[in-house]
Length: 546
Image (cartoon, rainbow, N blue to C red; front, side, top):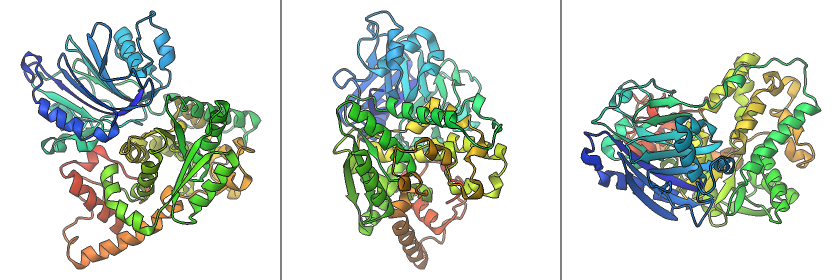
């Protein structure tokens, strides 16, 4: 929505909230205060019908007119939102003149739902979490299909008891008049007594007091979920053109902003392509694109990012970190990203440092998340287990559908902690369709072909050859953080073992996946110290390899 934000919502049944008065407004205000970092520009609260809506605002679009919660002219319906809706102008034009009174994409979403009901949510193209209440007691909460924007909830008891957390829509259940249903942007928002019941609100779903939980969209559209067999061994210029146009269009849509937009530039293929396209768009506006890179001195990421920045003519900013900086940021990074998967933590530490510095210059950054899942960029996926094209396609779909628990969570938390919005062009709905419609054989690596070869070839001439065909490094590894953190984790684990501190730590906690290394045991301990009571199996995911 026009701001990048934090939201909290509570919906109470008629016996839970007698006379429409919120059962525990102090709780909801505490929850909102815990996500204040997500929206340092403004705070807003509204009680409407049987809903309490709270909002922390970071102004991105319609900076002067986007205060939330916002209402229709008659003040019969109110909405809070987190994210961006890229087709809001087209939506707004469908209503009579004067209906939509601001440039806010949040207001356009409000009127779409008022006009067309729940089905309108499926027409929203973007990344969003929204909560809406009406004076007649109706309401609605929805999350975008990929779960780019975070949302957690304490659902009605019958959904809690049956799971209903992250694995898809739950059939209609009758409203419980004695229940209060809670929603928030981050895990940290919830009071200790509510933590055991917190679930991840499923992406592509909406909930209302009258309908229960309803799926309105899939992250991966059904028409591109099955593999499409190649009718020829390789691609042609028309295929390359379709890939290139889909990526360029996705970046262009995410340049929409009333404030400065930059790019996180690791020097790897994905962020380099995003930066090259964004730099071209910025030049067309008479602007110079800011880019940001982080790493230890002369790390691979810094060197490559420097070359990319020189080639595309960006206003480049390097953040040098020492092993001491990385070690000092570790505990804080685990707390901020609300996760303990080792691969995620290794990339989160430099990400957090990078976001802190970038937030001093811009309010929006573009990133390269999603490209590896679309174009088979991970090394594990090129092993014999995924040699069959159908198996490969199924794994790409699975990994895309798990992003909201992994890379997207890390990306959202590290940036929003400093009031910075991250946008992911590779998760654009049109680009997802275009990439997954490609035969999976074209994403394999026969005879030494590098991963993501079709994406690289589609952008011949956009980057220097050595950078266009540079091999993949994980962000934490390329920045130098991975080595530092692995050594630090080994030392801490050894010290903890010597002191007997980890003797009681199970290899497979009852509410988690099996902990796969000493490093993961260390991170799990840090996470548990901040989020005790939260069940990881209801709100988190893990990478295929640690």
